[in-house]
Length: 118
Image 1: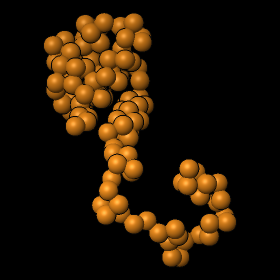
Image 2: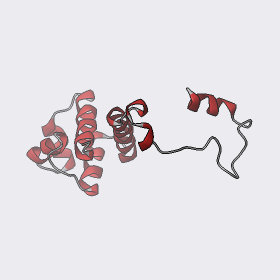
Image 3: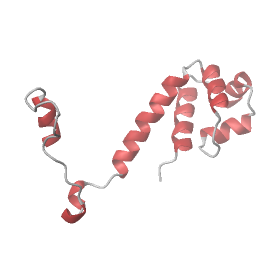
């Protein structure tokens, strides 16, 4: 199972290390205990939105950037964990129509159809 708190911790740690900052520096600026920040970075504690904002402020990074990076990592993890369609028996597959009634014609965006077909 993919845990949001682990991905969030990974992103925060990567940002801190990239800046060459210590846990002590960031914890002091964020006004959070060193031990708690360490647990957040290791994905052992769920950080509140207020705490995340404080940590991001200490790192000088917008919270939106951190959440975007977490979202990207989450999407990658989901893709890696998703079963390949070829592994799903035919009778368990969800039928997907070639076109949706009332939608724009395939000729409007043929490159999208080509990407989906690939």
